[in-house]
Amino acid sequence: MKIKIIIVLLFICFNINAQKIIEGTVYSIITNKPQSFVTIRVVVNDSIMVSGTTTNKHGKFKIEIPNNINQIQLILSYFGYENTIIPLSILNIKKIKADFTIGVNINETDFVLSKEEAENDIKNGIIQIYLYAKPIHSLDILNAIASDFGFKYNPLNLPVNQNVIQSVEMYNTVVYRHLNKINGLFWKKKFKKKIKKG
Image 1 (cartoon, rainbow, N blue to C red):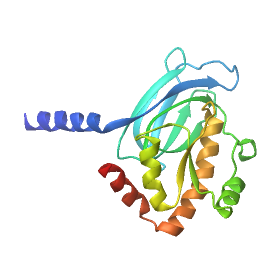
Image 2 (image 1 turned 90 degrees about the vertical axis):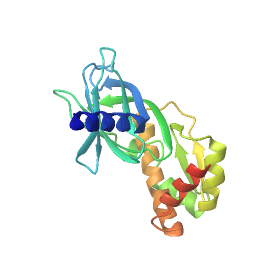
Image 3 (image 1 turned 120 degrees about the vertical axis):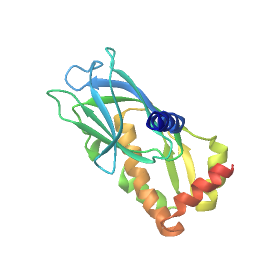
């Protein structure tokens, strides 16, 4: 009886925490049409699977992720296709809605943003983190707190697809490294505390 109660409580706690959502449509690189029954795994630390699902007959999916997870890999798999691995930073993100393509890993040369752009922006005093998803708080609240750490959030007004996501992740990685230098390695924890206080 005790074991059953513990399992139920764990299940309830997990569902309470599952606040971040990724949803979208997966397309085939071969047919350019929505691909059904694609396996989608959410992985942390390169190996630990925390969530998963498959696309429906229309190629659509929706995954919930525990709120305390901030960095993931989205892995798309389907028989006969190369696995597609998409790194995602989901700190302060409430919902990501995007189109993905199974069987393609986009080359950096095709990205809509580049590392060089991030480095040039930093040199010119433009310290920004691009957003391609719905943030967990209003942009005004996020930017009021972000200014204390020397940056601002900038919503990217483009249709969200795999290219946009991977481009933004690469750009933001350069900016995060810069923010680590000026704020110390644990600045994100302080940032999250301020966000919680509102």
